[in-house]
Image 1 (cartoon, helix red, strand yellow):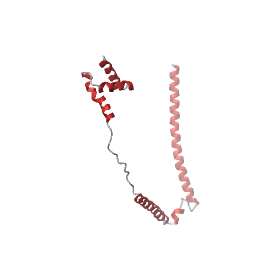
Image 2 (tube, rainbow, N blue to C red):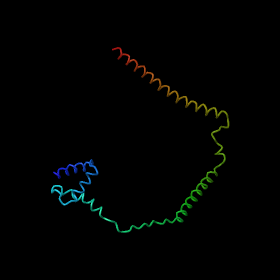
Image 3 (cartoon, rainbow, N blue to C red):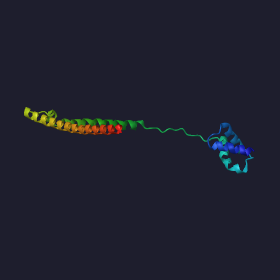
Image 4 (tube, rainbow, N blue to C red):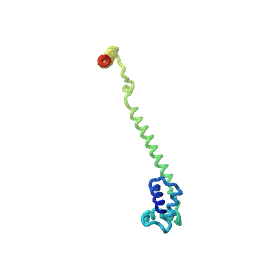
Length: 157
């Protein structure tokens, strides 16, 4: 009778549905000497808890922390910082040695005829792209008209 009750509690325990009182009952049952023969296989599982409860740690744990050498870390950080600042100024100075004409040449034209030709070329390119977009819209209008025609015919039927 008692082994049937223990089997039911074991089933609940392995499915994770047992209560703390039922788990304590299992621990007490398996720590006793009168365990049913067919339940002997579970004795090490529940016997472990009572064995661990009696164990005491007697060994001291050393609490030494590693000393970080802050001086070396700060020297390395300073070196990286100086290297970064130096490379910034070096690259900045090499860019300043370019001719002044190249910096002031911002796409401006000397003669009005050149400026007019460049503007007409740019406007022709924009016009071509806009016309391509308008052609695509014409295809969409034709599709819309065809769709409306088809769906109107289906509604009539």
